[in-house]
Amino acid sequence: MAAEYLDVEIRVGIWAVDIVMAVGRGAALDTEMADALRAAGAVYSAMLGGLYPEFLARRCDIWLYRLAQAIQKYGLIAPEELLNNLICREFEEIGEALVRAQSSPVMRYWLWQQHGQPMSLVM
Image 1: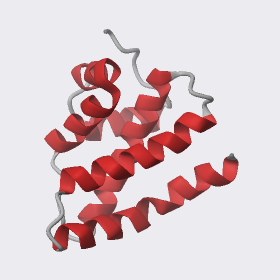
Image 2: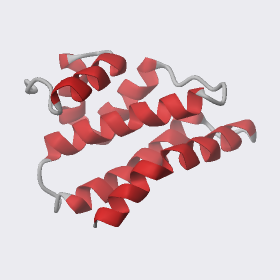
Image 3: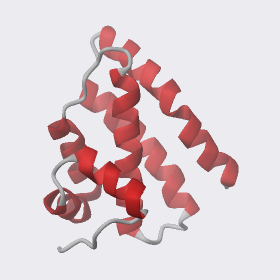
């Protein structure tokens, strides 16, 4: 399982290149990022044994922010609203609570870096 985790962490840059190329060919950025988020989320979920949905949402939110930063290196901007919408769509109430608690993906990332698991969610 640790190998899959490392693969997801390493693949952020690879996914970014794939997404930028797909968008260049006419694919929708939100669809491409949602597909990558679901794939990464499946690995994290398997590692957690399907448990801890709040932690899974937080972990995927951080991963998605890293993906957006990697995409930005190639000149493609993923707006905050897109990141928030993807988290809300993928994680429903938990995602909505996460975004409601802190609407800025940059701040959520910073809090994660500072505390590992920032603030509890109010649903």
